[in-house]
Length: 373
Image (spheres, rainbow, N blue to C red):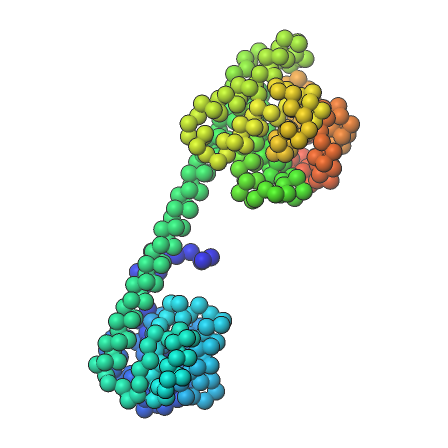
């Protein structure tokens, strides 16, 4: 069900009966029986009935239907309702007819009528039979709406919790970025690049939309292990010594360990992706990355995507140890293998999407530098 159910709609009860008969006298008799309990609507044939049903199906709680009528008779109407709408599931239809032969009764029940009542009607009998079924259907309709409303509330609460979780994750990641002299936009761009590549290239083949959303959230945590790296190394303006670089490389393992120590995160569907990305986003296709020297398809595709997103953003952004490279120069550096080897499939997808990725930066190019606009 696409539309949203409100509390007011749950409490709303349909209160109209639609009487369908080409005889004005017959309609008047039925109207007299039900006028004190329901609002009365009338139709002279099946076509008029169908139009009123479609216009007022939320208000109508029962249809009292004759069989023999011009334009569209009662049986034809039932066949239309059975084939084209879900009205018979929510609104009971009663055949009230003088043509109550075995064939009509059998066909009527097959098509979904709740009861067949012969003319001439006995007022208290027909009212009792109609009222009891209407009460049952209205209760079922209300319970269905209540269940849908509760389902929506659970979904809304889950979305709120997910937003809260993402907010806390972003806050932690941004705090780490601030420590390394970044604005905090880095993690948002990595997430955006990751989502775009998985959504708009064949890199995302086989992944559901929900999985891609989780991966883009997990990408925010790729550098969470830098919280364990000292400021002296993290913010060093020059090139790191070999010893310092070995310490810096431990942020991958430290990040994975940190994520493992958060019980709430371990229960979340994002954990699997977050752990992989934090630990392995510096692995390379030829096995010359770190910390585990993974190579080829042993590196999950979501890790590969975050890896190239991280390198790309690092190149086109100003850091304490370097100026920003231009977009074209950054693309050439990645494609030529200056930043480590990536898979041919990843390079093809990334190269084809790179012009669109530039739009995430809201920047303008000045010479070889990327200047915030």
